[in-house]
Figure 1 (cartoon, helix red, strand yellow):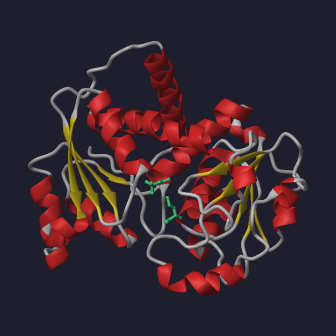
Figure 2 (cartoon, rainbow, N blue to C red):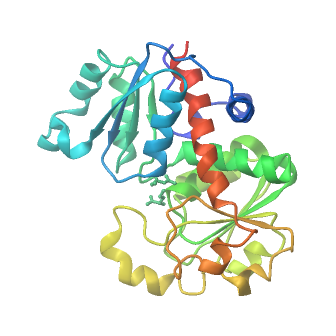
Length: 304
Ligand code: CP
Ligand code: NVA
């Protein structure tokens, strides 16, 4: 059966744990100088309708690092830009490649490609989810702080795609999550409701960033204006005033709490340069871990 990674919900707790364990192993093996040919002869297609630095390059590096090949397609260069139906695109691409990695706007695009593709489709960010990011972020948290079930994770800022995937991770993996979002910028209500109904540990939404960080082991920050929302930038700057991760807010958190940012960062908006460049912030380790995690994902999904 073809497995897709449309959101974290496509995998069980054990399977998500398996991705993390394998990514940690692959990281160690790379550090030890071990070369892999696990995906020799395999090819993935990357279809990206939004910009990307980390996700694109880490998927490409992961695939080449496992002996495979990559074909990159920017959305505007395919016939999708001229309204070719997604179901046709999916069936054609599946005849050429062994997996599709897709970054797009609507989650419906990812879902439709997956419905018609006979090869695995991986969501490399949609407006609703960023599952691969959260897997590598959880890996980073485990590396830095130990088992995530024992930790309290905070989110400060927009209830965006990354926040939605953190909620799904909390639901499936069973850790405490507290989100502070300004009114009007809550996470997806369906994802939040389902997460809260099923989770073993509390998933809490508050308005106060100070309350969110007060007992946190890990504090997550992301941009205030996600890709596709650029037209709202001015009103967002206003709405998120007071949600900046700065030394003042960090001082309200426990002294051993670490800060995560999936990057790209906007210094002076959601995070100050001081915090981003400080030892408390592990953003660049997160960025590295994306490559190890993408290897683990590709190996499981297309390695057979
Ligand atoms: N974190 C992340 O997804 O970065 P990119 O947009 O550069 O891929
Ligand atoms: N929430 C951000 C994440 C970027 C990696 C966005 O969607 O633009």
